[in-house]
View 1 (cartoon, one colour):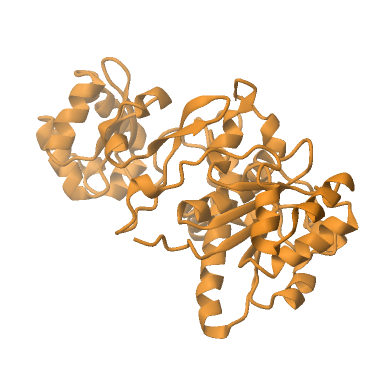
View 2: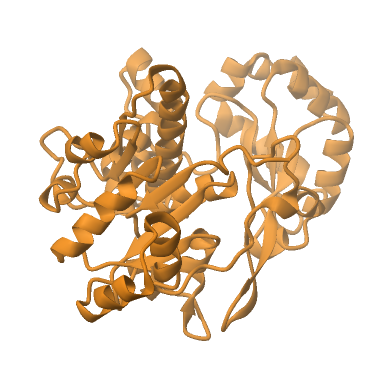
Length: 397
């Protein structure tokens, strides 16, 4: 069956993480990604570890299945070549600092004259507008500014970064959502749009109850370790051998938990009657919970509570994911055969679509710098071998 985006072509100026994560989502759905890289050095993330036989496993994990063309964007000939390619694609994606594409003569206002149906996706630290627009940004910068680090970590402890690059990744995800919305609208209007996504905006948008708590109470949310701020019991507790997460999201689950653990006495205590009561007396509740969970191992609790309908889980280390039967069933770790490296496992596609089998998710290797330059120029622009050789001599490609 046809993949949903296999008719879509993307001219991809992005590098490092936010932009490449966005275009990886399109590749997963069948789009053809033409990745523009600097001759010689390419995407910055090619220099990020860990390395396998000299190649960045980081780069491979988010750039597999893309095609690379090496272009010196300081060359006027390269800029003209890009403009020719713009006529042939549906999407331009970039994550330079705002103003960079305009300086190159490749801003949205210029490119939409060439291709009015073009979707122009820009992902940056602070967006195209506002007083911070031109500031440089990395993931940890926006995690700090966006408030998420202020609610992450142990209670009373030092600020802690979220353990994955959530600032970049949410920008990539929101970028993909914006582009897909623009593509749907284009089917009606016939016109493209600019999609402007800021990493900082993304961090604010995922704060969920932190914003509502401050709005409702005026209290500034702070780190709470592993516990939920407004549901209890809903945190990690120590078992005989490690920790287990228990999530009683309503009073019915709380009652079931108490009965399963032979602690129906807790149901008679006024301080634990409702979720609001339990949340207000969470420290007292934790004493009882630790007493209960200390009687068995994590595996024993995981099996017993889940079998009886109470949400529970271990805290898996990354190695455990490679042997988890649910991860295997959902094909969330796939194997790519990367030339010069061999087989490497990377994250699979979390979006499952009917009619698109898992083996259809692109497992092609990540490209070498400029590996597909000739192929792209011949396929899209019908360039001759002679013209391509001329571009090479002029150091354009």
